[in-house]
Image (cartoon, rainbow, N blue to C red):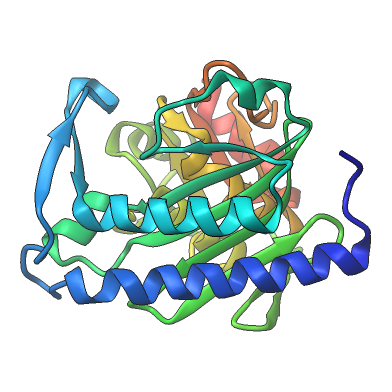
Length: 272
């Protein structure tokens, strides 16, 4: 399958925006601000640190809708989603939809606003299109490769300024502690429960350094990775390598998200 042309990619992005907004509208009746979700809730498998992962009927409903809708838009593409049994046939596809119907299910289930619908189209291991919709915040982040990043239609561009003092840092406490030990005092921001939103907030400049623990999955980061990159940022592991997607095992190690200009200093703090 050839890459979509710039015009067709723009049309595809519009269709994916619409799908993300429709999925958000489907989720809202289940959400209860500050209270447990109205959706049925259960737990599956073992997630990060050996914890079982929550799933709700809203996750499943959104996943079903998005799979039917997106594969209808681009039937040649493979499919990889948190809530769908993995089909190894995706490994033979150059284009793959990478989807988390609700990134931040724990937040969604407990009434916390920081959850989002994350949709990426990956080509040959790299994101080509990324859409991230946070319904409670009424914010839709988007990017196409080479076309810049936007939030609610406004261009996102990270500053070329030096790392502020103190830097605003968000992520798992052990990683934030390590960063602070090696850089001096920082402003600790609350850990954003949706990893995709944590990265998007680096892209919009409200977080200076976003830290990511091991065991994130493709669907957690693919869309936000492209949004961050097109805004002038970078997501890498602590050796400086960017993530690659649609591998047999779609899992990643510890990572850092930061403006490109600040990356050498920030990653240096995590190597020691």
